[in-house]
Length: 457
Image (cartoon, rainbow, N blue to C red):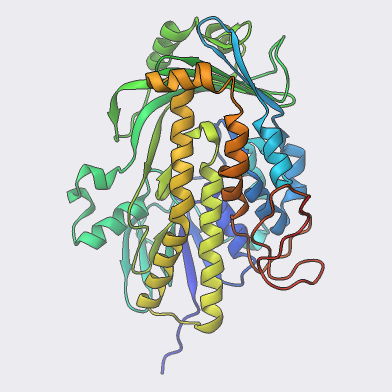
């Protein structure tokens, strides 16, 4: 009788979520490999990235927090202003409230720096499991495994495929084609590209500009458009979010001419007091970028032995900075359940795995929908997408403590319910006003179980 092959995970995509999966899977004892279509995993361009308290807890469990600390930055305060005349409308200290509520605050980091640090902190034995220039073109699941074919003709066999390959996920496309018994090219456009862009973002990196505060965020409002500067301690990032005339789900590659067009039309808008776009842009460090901001949430996150995580299942508008954080939570929920399953069944069948994937999706849908709504509303409120948004932003929020009530009573509890890796110890959990619901199975104080509250003010 032929010996059954050990359970093996094939992760497709080695961006931020793929690299995070590598760190988590390397601590499970589960065999895995990662297929990445590009020649390198190291990103060359990107904006600032927010790391929320729930993600910092996972970094702590993975032993990454101390390594990341020198590169982590933070925001202490925010200002909302008129993009037309730079008049300050509201001061926002929500970030300080979040730190009080959850112990960890929101940290910020340059996206390429996080990619580099996640990669460089992997052991060499794990780096060797990352295969580059592997563009996935076909996936064939069966009752006892799955075969992945790449454009270079190579084949890779495993037990499951985790699609961590982002907004334009090839795994999602192939999975949906398998579900419907069609070729990928024969799927309707909404199945090929499920996310829709309402805004586009022009962005760049800058030094701290004279007259502006460090560790401060500036958001400028204008009809159908918003501006932004996010200052860390020694550098900042700027952007203009512009509403697109015709919403689109198609990938758009913008040119230098398109960038010049935005500067010509928006150059006189204020990003912060004393600083218009044209002046900020003149102080930029390196190249600028122009991309569409897709939004959306798909139905059906899995099929047979294929399951999706991160931007392959949802895309948030980036003002709230929740996208990567939600992808990390996807991995936590999925791998917690997978690890538990494999303790009882080393060779689970397709039906068993499909059941597990459906439970994973069900667990993640509740807060995914709430975070998607929060991200969407935040962007439209700042950009005065409607007259109601204008009234709320100009007259109601500056005069009523609605943000504090929201983060204390609605969003705070949502964050506190985020799960952690249930088998890895947590070194430091700062004191918090709102109790965390989940804790590792074994705490440093020897407490067993997953729901005991710790360090509550």
